[in-house]
Length: 238
Image (cartoon, rainbow, N blue to C red; front, side, top):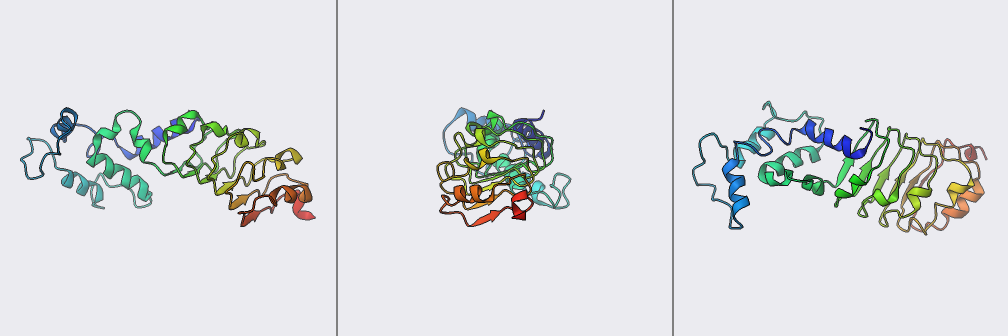
């Protein structure tokens, strides 16, 4: 509890990936066994299914029909629906942590997360990580996938950037740190091209930054920066 890994596992349970019509069970037993025992081509769709089993087409229809008891609520993300459909077509992905390899965008908002743990590294294709409105005070950059392009930490308790800047994702384009606890000139030294060579958007709004000239002198090294938010800091009074 309190880690991103724990929050993600709870999210998977909410999606019901282990349950009918997704997952591994009596409804697709022969298909899964055939994939395990042979590297040959998948069984032809026209072959008769054993009693009690369903074809992938029927299982997908149960997920897609808005009147189905297994349909997701209309406000769920397209990614959630995609994960369920992929697991229907390839249920063997549920073994180990292979489902996480499919995730490109992860949004965990207001779930009491306190720790960005190393389990995040299993998301080998992750490009967008949204962790707003949690209780994160420290982010260790070694736990962030190198593929990350968007990191949003708005409404957290981040007060120091040193751990985040030790080895940040080199392709990161947006860093959101609004409504945190950043203060003092020591933070400004972490906001240079040496750490963020591809940063396009930076949100530092509503922190406790006071040195406008010192901050700007560091930010001028960010040659790709196009969006900068500073409102809500004491330096905005200058």
